[in-house]
Image 1: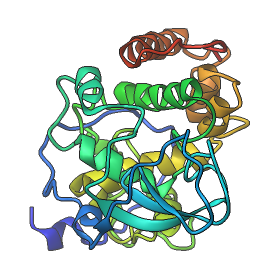
Image 2: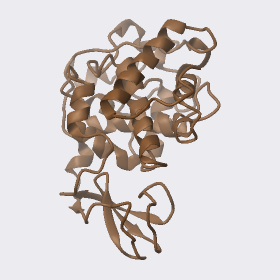
Image 3: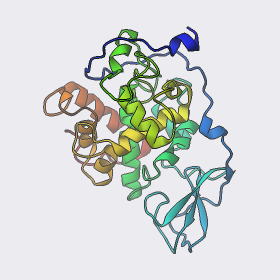
Length: 299
């Protein structure tokens, strides 16, 4: 199918239904990351929790340079206002709590689209993610996030929804901005099967990317795919009472992240088997990362 035909606007009545988790093994149009291709500075020395930084000093963290506003120590860049984001950088040390080897161990059969570099590059969009609290808290948060990616995309094997018959459903024509990319353009993509035109609009606005008009970027750019998942994780309550980020850094536990994603569809007896599957995956991933799962596992 040509790009022009693929992106043509179709007049069909939309209906709101629950998101169905499914995806496709089809290779993306491109595995290049637009973010990674942008100009970047050389990374400063990697941030260290034990180093004291004076105002004006710079450190790199998660592939970005950060400048201290005033004296600071043990405050992770991105987690407090003492650090100012100075932009992407290249050549820095790897201080992310998940190593490349651990990522490979968690997702041994993943689709080539889901690169470790794409994931790390996306972290700059929400620097408080995996940067808040103790090392144990930070590691549990990443484990929880990757658990849901593992569940939703079946071990990162799928890039987009399998069932094309459901594509048209994900366009809510009642929204004032409509579906400019087409009635069938807002199907699930990426590690959490990101879908619906209103989510593409909101995430695109937050990330500074026109996802409403070009939702295909989520299946073409690995960094953008991870960024959409991080947008939901860090900013959306869903049917829950807090964001998944808040659930993990506050100590509420993994169960509240399930609630924020699917609410009554799984929690409170909605689908005990699905909840148990997520908890089992979380236990496996925390074991790979060498951290205890913590309390509050069920919703």
